[in-house]
Every structure is written in C-alpha cells, then in structure tokens.
Image 1 (cartoon, one colour):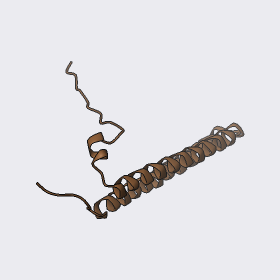
Image 2 (tube, rainbow, N blue to C red):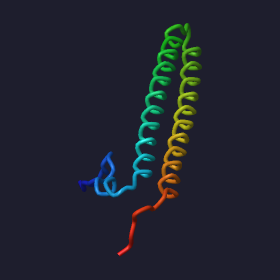
Image 3 (cartoon, rainbow, N blue to C red):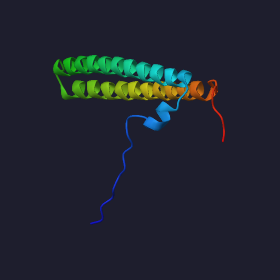
Length: 111
C-alpha cells in the first residue's frame, strides 16, 4: 500500500517575514488576528447555544417523524451558519491583504 505524506504549514507566520514587516503591516496583522479570534469565539459560543437548543427540542420529540424534522431543521441552519461564517473569514482575510498591500512602503530599498 502506497503511503502519502502530507505537509502541513505552520499556524504562525514565517518569523523572517514578520520581523521584516513595516509597523503598519504588523498592526494590520495583529488587528486581523484579534478580530478573527473574537469572531471565532463568538461563533463557537453561538453554535454551542444552538446545539443545546436543538438537543432540548430533540429530547421533547414524541415521534420519530417529529425528531427527524428537528434534525433536518438543525442541519440546515448549521450548514447556513458555517457558510456565513466562512464568508466572514474570507472577507476578513481580504481586508488584511488590502491593508498590507496598500500600506506605506517607507524605508524599503531595492538592491
């Protein structure tokens, strides 16, 4: 059986890139990571609350048909939540890229 090796990138930016960043770029990255973390935390709390509500509804079901309807509604709303959250994260990354690429290039010289 053939084995495949998968390389996983680091969760942290390359240190050489980080140390070479201009202060406005570094501030943009810091702001974006902070915003991302706060958004992820809010989303996790919201999803946990919705999961508990669905479990409570499911426990109150009196027939398999009712339970199936609760599960279907839960799955639909969960998929919509994850799609919306994914779009927010993509927009956040786009904002970071725009801030970094349009920031001032002070002190950079080409050799």
